[in-house]
Image 1 (spheres, helix red, strand yellow):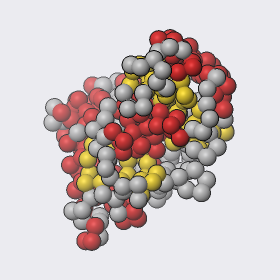
Image 2 (tube, one colour):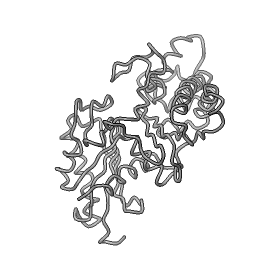
Image 3 (cartoon, helix red, strand yellow):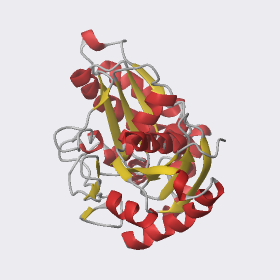
Length: 323
């Protein structure tokens, strides 16, 4: 590592945890770490915890003078304003001037974008989308996010909020979203949270059907427990994935028909389900496409470690900062 080389900090704010890394211009992550997002009730406490966690790494690489800037990926992040606006999965409500607050605390320039957009940039620079000019990144985690790249450009829209595909209504009058109040959005069905809701609904609707999941206490029923049961060929758990894939595939078909991407890349914790998720998703997507779109779009998993893609994408913002 050249001690005169400038470095970037990439931060990915998730609904549960925040991951960060110090990155060089080649995309090598020199140091990485994580803190809890949820445990910090105010944004001021959160930024202070973040600063305390990253400071030792900054000192190890030679101090603040080596840091060109900080890039942040966040839910409902507005690239143009550097703000987080009304994020349903975060403790802090309203409009948060996150880039401004981070820059003030760390003493270096900061920029911000939507977390899924950051992941899409990371994938385009270093992962499965390398060389692609048209693709959609779908993040399946605590919520459902998306980053849309068309003609080699990330789509921000006129106000910075393009790409909220997780909040598109896929089942009119369906599940009530816990944060937005909308009914039937994609996120309520195909996020890790949505998968748990589906399992609970299936367990209640089919009381006579035996399942490993009946032995799991309601408070401990999470997406990992459902995955573990499905791997053991538990029919109810497998039905949960088939239902999730059916809904996700239907939504992806709509997305394909509006932007005709070369690929859709699935990213995030839920993708650990592998074939259990992607097989029914691909089947449903193809069934719901017009003939001119069928068998053209690759449906693949991210090639990057989940935290790496978000960190790398966020850090890429730094090289765009004018100082």
